[in-house]
View (cartoon, protein in one colour):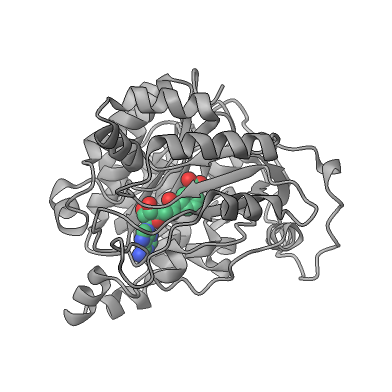
Length: 416
Ligand code: V47
């Protein structure tokens, strides 16, 4: 890391001291990190925090995404995936189609099945309970991670009961974890402009807390790079941190950079000449946002560099800016790709391991809850084809004990 004098010159001496001692940063310090002219100085602090938690470990998962339907009653302005029922391009997979996709694991068992669609007007909760029971039977080794908290609220409206009842029924059917999507940006004025029908940020946090209290872990996210300011991002991150202090079940934070194709928000931004300006600075802004997230979210164990939306190169760089996870093999993804993500549809385990090792990190095959899996379950990867970037320090053991986190596990009561 750069020395103290350098951080003093940047006006970040207190931030530097706090990071060094594993102490919490304030919102104002989050703002300072966004304003800092030297992104490498910010990245070095985040890398220090990441190494304290995870050493040189970088996680990935053998997973399968299932986007069961794109029919959604909400009209989020950033979404290129959603359709109205009967609209051209609308689809809903049958249960048999879904099970066929899950069956086809090409000889390597999936550790995670990630199921999301939209807030469907007609698919009832019972349909998903039946589906999850079938998935459990077919793939007992896989953890079912499904829905965002927005979909939990939708089911509650649909079924005329409270969200606690929905969570209880889904847990009984085999749901272990909620995905992190749907958080978007919490600032209510912006939320009104980009996703007016969606639950509020307050509701997002309270339903996540309810899930955590019932032993259902969840991820969390932030959609950024559209009309929000850096201040909005800092407030969003601090709201997640505040919820985590209370309920402790967020496992991983996923920064989701706005994909600006085929959606209404992108069309509006480009009509105002703002989208292209955003695009030019995008890679660095993504890295800085990941770094600030690592530094502010001192109680959320993992930060995901989601290669689908970041792109492979930026995701690799992000491992040096605070991220410790690349997500997974994915197999099939529509939400990011329909909005312009130009990444591949899938990655093999070998490719993920090479990506990680090529950046000087140690790959760890994990399940949805970040429990490391026995490396002997799968064949060893081929030696790395790329010349690894030289690591700047010797490996440190994960979670030195300085951090308040219980490393790599959700908080008490979650994900049991
Ligand atoms: O909920 C929609 C966002 C989410 C766009 O929990 C967009 O492990 C960028 O939540 N540009 C879906 N983002 C993806 C998601 C996710 C992905 C991987 C892992 C996990 C996890 C969760 O993507 C949506 C929404 O918040 N989104 N449209 C867009 N144009």
